[in-house]
Length: 209
Image 1 (cartoon, rainbow, N blue to C red):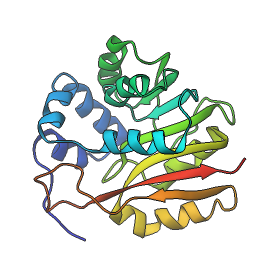
Image 2 (tube, rainbow, N blue to C red; image 1 turned 45 degrees about the vertical axis):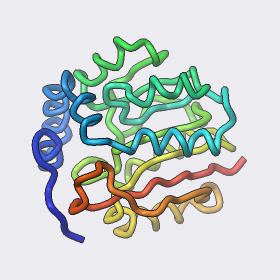
Image 3 (cartoon, rainbow, N blue to C red; image 1 turned 90 degrees about the horizontal axis):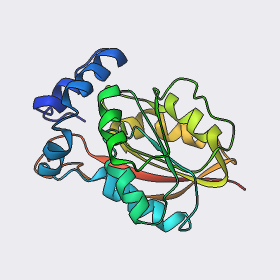
Image 4 (cartoon, helix red, strand yellow; image 1 turned 90 degrees about the vertical axis):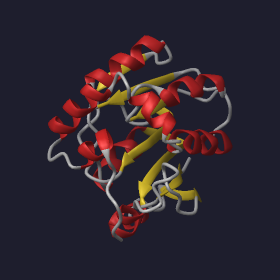
């Protein structure tokens, strides 16, 4: 599935060759990120929040915002009834913006796809919006999220359709019966007006109790 490339800052991030380069680009983008993504109609955080609210009782916690960026989702988590949240992100600059909002109890500079410093079953829910995408994180990033999600908890994430059909769905299936798909959206474009780009889907994974 081909498609036009993203332009501007997002295009540069997708073309980055290493986690360090991605982090540096996001550091430089942190100040204007939210305004630019809002103008583009960025959908992933809203969709993830809606799915989380449908599958995890209000007040459940803690929640891990995995790939939190500037904390867009973190602000909404508290409003929706999930006030106990932590954040991880690769970019120090993004986390600095998120920290100023005061919506996370802890923030950690960490990369998905590597071991995470949390005990098994630490989180009632994990949300990862816009991370499993071109040039960022593949299915290898899911393993630690499954480990740190508690039994009966949920993992809500967005995945590029090319990743999903290119091995991600099979990787999810490999966790059975520990993990099952509770809900899966139809493919959608993450930013309206970019119909030529590769679409994504959102998935709710339920960890068995």
